[in-house]
Length: 412
Image (tube, rainbow, N blue to C red):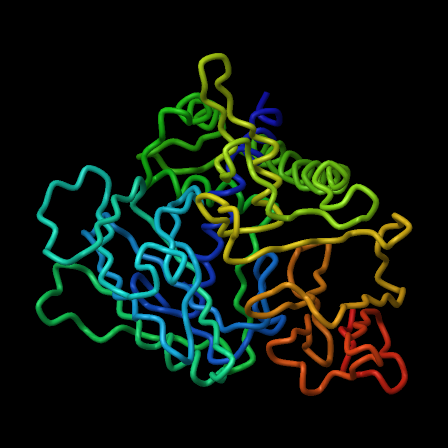
């Protein structure tokens, strides 16, 4: 019984535990609530997170609203840089988008995040966002324009401010941490072992259960996970948990691989739509209508198994678009020891940039290599890559660079 409940708990809690891993990473860097982690350069494999981007500098932060409302001052977009990203609750449900496609429409402003049940005043001129949870996190990207540089994007990111409302009228300067210096890991991958359940206990020691979660909360109690009580499982329970979280990892991995054809972008090729949504073009994976009410636990778990920070809704023209391939043109699974090439035409229908990133299928994170180069893009690498005769570019990824084409190669 404990094995079965632990297995289902992992699938159910994938979004929450996946997000809580970023609290661990922030703690490793001594970046507490309202500190902003801003990369001065695009990320390298030292950023150990799920399906990250290595082309634009990241900004991350987290805060605990149990201590009161929090203000996030977002700068207006400039000619040099702009923001894109989401603020999410503990279930990774987006509660606010920022930037030209977000709440501020690129004009900037002061966003006030208020905790559950907040009845205090909201100062004039603030965007109030009522958070359903106490712990919230955000991930933004500072994207340079065609006339901007990476240094411009980093300087722009440091114009953000974050502080508790109670600190007004003289909030302390926002603390910034730069993980791009020092050669130290930003370890934000979830742990598929006993620590999974320790994180579950830590999350729900603070957060309240939603109405849709109360049944599972009852199951968690049988595992010793209960709000207001210490978590101290016996040896038999630990053994069941460890086996369950191991099996859940492989279950999500194999199910995801098998579902790729059902989310294919073109029926005759092996590119899949990594932004596949629920029936409502969102990422809740809940069905609520006159005839059907359900939580699609497997689909939700798998989506947050290989990706994080999905938007609240996918518009008809989304701010970003991702395609993924786990097989070659003949349908054979991509293998680490082989060399592959991808032909990119000259005129791609993109407004900002295109990139190719290769991930480790075991972690869905960047691949470590001596070159520390997980991807290539038109944004940062167009000047150094060799062009084809027709103006396009051929990219290569594999264990060894093609002779004379190192600039077009992603090491695996």
